[in-house]
Image (cartoon, rainbow, N blue to C red; front, side, top):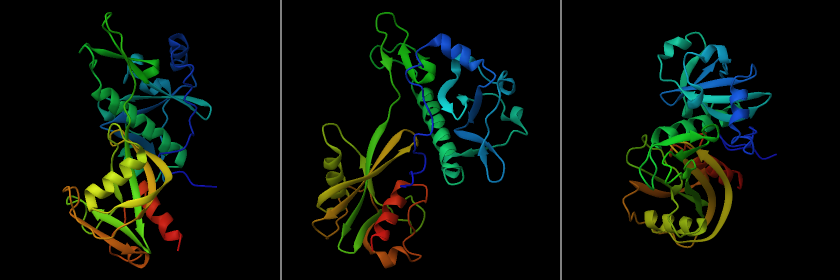
Length: 293
């Protein structure tokens, strides 16, 4: 069975058909079964060795949150799970675990828990950025258990959905070599696959061809979908592809990359280059290409 990319996998029943029922949500958040995962400074609370996400009972968070600021994530196993942004001193949760960054947790948590915390972080970040209506400028308020917002102006009432920014990421091959590049601010010797945001009015395949050509001057032919990965840093959806190059001369055109090269499989298995982080879809694209030998 195909393994999920880190942070992906439909492990949670989000109960989208129930989230607009405010009475149901009010009863659910007061239920003894309700569990809460706090987010502090964009970090999630975990405990144990190996670590697992800390799901707190209502009694442990009563003084730390307001019900109308909590976000319903869905049913996680038998528990309805909510998240909230911890504004209070995190010391109030002393003994419940430690807060860690999502990039670290993606590599150590079980797949279902990594999916849950990525969902929580993405929505917390969205609410922190989304404060006003883009149509009329009025204040917005959470709705649907924190999964949407609405404009508070009676003349507007716009419903606002969480933003997701689609970005392509592609392993380009030419014979037995793969195209990898690096940005100037990356760790020394680290290289990765070409990536970039999808622009208005273009298909995903068009975006693949444009990004590769803009960054490296390489023209590509066949483009094949591989897989996708939610990447809440802060709100990307990475859409992974493979592509076959029609040319091989690299010219760095748009300034995005400090360097780009063709690497053989043998080189990719050596200390140089350093490959993308293991939790990233970029690494999965490289690994998939290596396995095709």
